[in-house]
Length: 364
Image (spheres, helix red, strand yellow):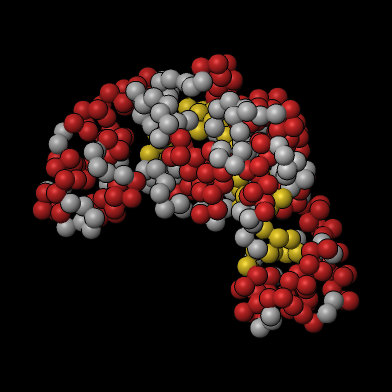
């Protein structure tokens, strides 16, 4: 499939990610979208006259020629929705971008990817948590995603570089510029072990409306999102909300009740939108990355099951098939939720099961 036509598809007026994917499904490729007749295009569900007029106009292809020249000159990789190098985790999200521009060295289908987000006004506490996360996660060959903004984002990227962790900044503008400019030296180092990623073409400024779009990439590209510090109206809460909508794990560090930049984290935890973590080691445990710990836990589970009640054994048997929400468990086991809550608490205290955001449970 021609890279020129892939880029051009994203320049067609009135065509967003969902309609672009519909065009690809029905036409077969980006080239065939541009070679299709008006009659053929109008048969595609969701494609109207206005969209067809835009497709048949040659402006998109002309713009794409300039964009292609720029990416080839600057060694930028084009990641298209149907390509094998496109981030598969992101591809599973309904509103994933059709095309991404990437300058860097990593594979986005890495086995372990997490996103770290937070306030642009990071406190010493928040910076300490970023440092702790990177120190603990360094041995686990993880790729860490953030947004290269002020505060928690850049603190995360700097700690990743310090601990030789691959890190990618997702940008709200084109790769022909950098905002904020003060992070240029950090971004240059990131390209050597990680990179810069954007769905926006050149000449795109860091406008306010671009950042929610950027946030959905940060949420969708990872296995889990960690909120370090956030105010109640912070963009990090938007990222957490998007991650929840994608059924991704969300974790948050708690803070003091009177700290403005912990209000968002405390709210996420209080409303079961995020699981509480007190230390970066909790994250390793929740994500099941510590093989030695897993072996110990399995041994403990086997020894404990000898003394378990019938209801406790039933819960373990149900969760052995996969994680379940408490209401699903109650229905499967035909147990009242009030009684089930006591059983779950007992199993949690014994370290046999763990809770996830949204009152979902799985075996430890």
